[in-house]
Length: 376
Figure 1 (spheres, rainbow, N blue to C red):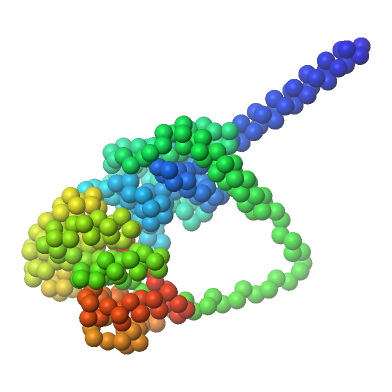
Figure 2: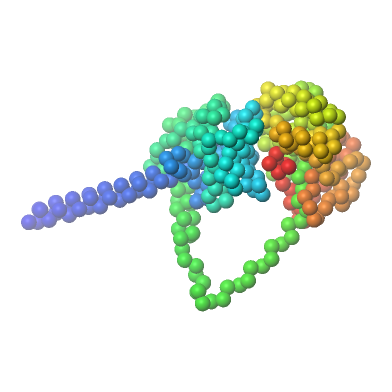
């Protein structure tokens, strides 16, 4: 009997261990980690990839160079006010409209794909995006902690096996922080239901909202470096002729996460559309970058509306920072009651004042935001 009892106890222990292992395996199978090339993207309860009707959906930030620092050849930008996500490879584009649950291309044709919103994060169907644009490669790899979703381009260095080996500690730590966050979310509030709750305070005044666009000049590179240090991508505008002459600088701007747009000098819609087509092709050849943002200062409001109907996002300045002026004078032109679309020339004459004004925009009283096509 003693031997049988010990055998039974051992079998029970093995069964318990097996059950624990199976439960752990099931838990891990529901967890997705993310990486882009050799860059590990931290997984949180808000951005963890998910399966929707059998299709894998990933947060749009995996395609955003502003979030990963890696240009995959496909970019994604989200407009919070319009609830739309723009995905483009420089030649084709798709807009996912979260409000109407639709998607359409640059010509307005419907597209058979849908984005999903969860916890204020937009998720995109990964296999569909890769198939439609044909540029980005992705793999899914099982690990003891969960499934790693990895996007790669031609610049990737490590194989999946080598990356998994190098990232083992990151996966383990990320899973622990994820589980802790989930646990904190599930904890009941410590406040008693009968205890009166404090009234929410009024949100502080966020100050003047500012979007920036820079016309090319001899200090453009210095301005771009300053904007990168400030942590805010900006819009740089080039004529088609300037694009051809400044191809190296354009690649640097795109690589740093800035937007590059076209400065159209035509006086008619037809002239501007011709320049836009020329500049768009140049930009795609130079930096594999989409061209959606244009400036058409020679057109009136009705003509600019025609450009927008043709699919272009038109930059229209509400404030011009001209030289010469002091930083104080430049900042004094901003409005606190509406968004400020500020245009400045990158020239040496006004560089000192412009640089000081840009530095001031990161302080209290201002909201310096990236200038994206979806915000115009």
